[in-house]
Length: 166
Ligand code: ZN
Image (cartoon, rainbow, N blue to C red; front, side, top):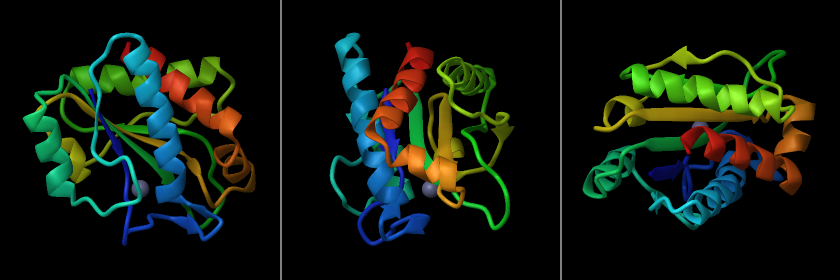
């Protein structure tokens, strides 16, 4: 499984200096990697530090690793009222099934969820294997933002995604 912590390095993603997307998706991704490795899954991370990685390289890493799944981790933002965890897929039924399963598991753990959506993100069409992009919550929403900064909530998000992948 390739885990793709979004953004990094010169690309902070969304959020504010005290809650940047690139800084929040990394611990969630690292926890997810640990949970999957504990279950015997071979994991590849597209980044493990605050470094810049191109979208092309993220797909290439997954391809070179011959991964069976690609899971990209992000945080969302919106100029208005929106909160909750989203999951996007593009390619096929396997990805759609995984996207729905992630939100189902998250909901079962008490995480506010939205609906899965088909979307044309590069990491979703540029990867060879079933791929999903998880928007773990809205950094523009005070409640989501506080939750995403909380290590216990980060654990819960990682657990939901790990359960769905497994
Ligand atoms: Zn993002």
